[in-house]
Image (cartoon, protein in one colour):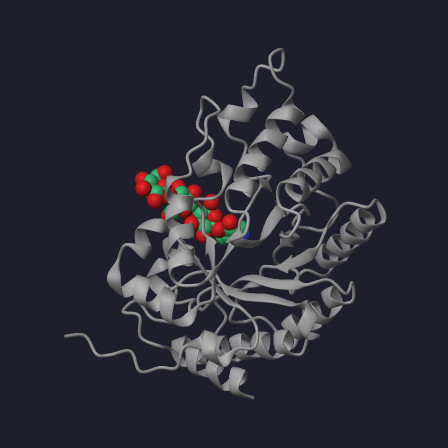
Length: 325
Ligand code: G3I
């Protein structure tokens, strides 16, 4: 008989949605499902709502696992967050090999976005419409199949306008990472946001992924959220995890876990300090350590709030304390 879960549900302590990234097979595991249902008020599909899963080589779409995640969210009164419509890292065959004598590339993309966004209309609180558009060094915007076919500005306009038409109520986001640790990338991201807003692109929210190492300087997350909040738009702290092996400069695991707890608490404090109307959601990028993509990068990593067995870590206690402040 496993111990009854004692720790307080995070979503009951927060005045804003607390999200988690999940995969459909996890939600079929009783322990993982219980953790997801107890603590979180919003679900993001970690990969099953991306083109790499949905778009088949023949151009058809499969929604089986996205539908399973949506069903779990409905069953537990949770919001669904759509991740992601366009991403430089996803250039599926179905689009790359499109016969444009039969259907325009823009038409095919509009069709995909309309099919995806309208399917979850009324459940999806928002969408990452374009994910990670800024080059890692901040010197420009990434090239991709989407920019090559539709142009740098054009691909944003097509994607955001198609998503807006498919669900007028969903908050439409742009989303990127390493904004806390790469000032040039943050500057370029903010320039892009200004440019899109000036061009009338229906950008409704700003995503700050917050994948970081435990050696991130205290205060960096706070400064980044403050800078992004200056646009007055809803902020989604969209993918937080804190690697305890990234950077490799830390004085041992205990110190790394202490710093990890401090960064999660700082992120909660910084997010809670935003004006209420800008607090879209605070999302962690995985349930337990063993569920994290970072574990696949390095088995010694422990980036999440719960350990491999689903037990709360110092980071969880730090988040509870911060939410109670
Ligand atoms: O589960 C299948 C398995 O059945 C299959 O045999 C195997 C071989 O293809 O694939 C497995 O799926 C993998 C999936 O993760 C689930 O583990 C996919 O290949 C793999 O591409 C996918 O990686 C995801 C990655 O994005 C690419 O989509 C990671 O889980 C996910 O954490 C990561 O998330 C990204 C965000 O979308 C954007 N921000 C950065 C973040 C971390 O890279």
